[in-house]
Image: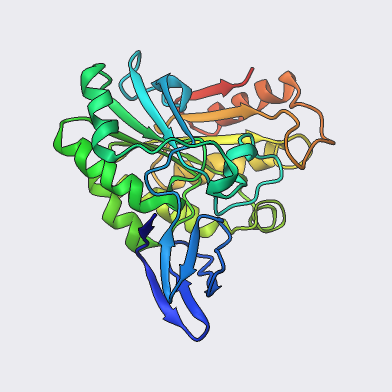
Length: 287
């Protein structure tokens, strides 16, 4: 446990300023991410130093197809997410509190040493929402950067500008998951909003971060040609036509099990729409 950053005192506890939710947390309570708790008038990051998952992955699994291709990365995750996507692929660790998952205490120094000793060139913050364990990610990223390792962020991009700007000097690549080009879908199915995600992607681009984008095509929800075209048009309009776009196939998960897996024909049509919209690099995932 470590005192959290980006919060202010409030009448009955604290207000977290890490992400756009701005959770008001009473004494003894926690934010929506379940991993930040108010104790004695201070906010604490409960998952600091206790990852629930560590793995040696191919970098293409993040997915990153044009950043250090053919290499491995040390994937790291703690519990927690500030979105509540009904189709979450990792709900067993993203939608639980730190004490509800298995974990192993590991310091930032130990994680960097693993990479150096095993000649793994990069560290990936992934599986859940890394910004909910910002302090741990930041400390690791700074140390990894000092040791010549690359840092990879895999995120939904729902964070405030100040913490993002503090982290960006240490991030080399990012895959950002855009849920849909529809704010109503974000609000109803993910408990978030679209605009901050798009703004943060542009901030990453301006900072020189290598960006790739993922869009999970959920059957009957965001898999229409119009939805795919709207996403691609936004990318083109903002100079992101060369950014790799990963169109990922949906399978029933978590609290959204009624829809069928995305038909392969839908996936192929989505790729065709993306190419015709001007996106240069389109990849199909989970197919």
